[in-house]
Length: 220
Ligand code: 5RP
Image (cartoon, rainbow, N blue to C red; front, side, top):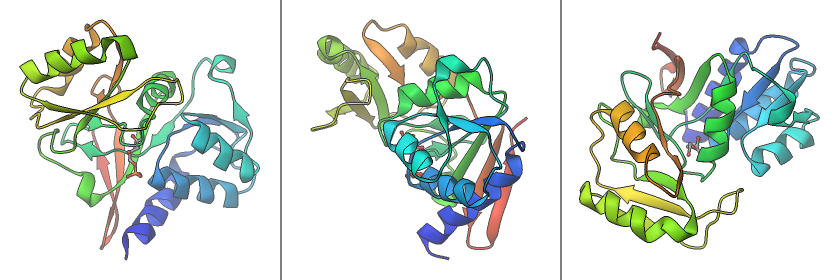
């Protein structure tokens, strides 16, 4: 299977984790695009979706799926999203597509996080993929200095602003051996909107696309 076929396979496999008639959380990215395609084909499976980006909202609507505001729901049974890296505990780096803040907000509404990814995303230790941080522009230099003090090489994402209107910094070269502790630490820094470590909002399950088929990893 080529990479796109792997994404389509995990996208279809995720349908088995969608309670019929529910409103679900939907993430962002090329893998989620294929999940949205599968959801559209499974007419009437969901009552609607809370989306983590303008991009996913547009794709959901194109496929006839109602997009609800996050404020309209109190909880979601499941949130389905991709990842840039996932470790053996289900902790993830996310935000390669720059949607990390809304992704964390929607994940926080959900009872379960089902990650859909190909096997290249599975790592022993997070950090080979540059860690994204959404920041308030005024704090970018200050946050950059703090990241550099941790040993990171920081690259502002050129020409990009998030759906919330903020810049993204990509922190290269961190070996994130304790994702929960680093997430907690960075969350204390003034001007950080969201750090792309998903440890508190880690996945309970990962559907991993492999050449042998879709593998299910359980973390709870
Ligand atoms: C977007 C994300 C995506 O989930 C992550 O970048 C994976 O994307 P893809 O499925 O295209 O590899 O966090 O902000």
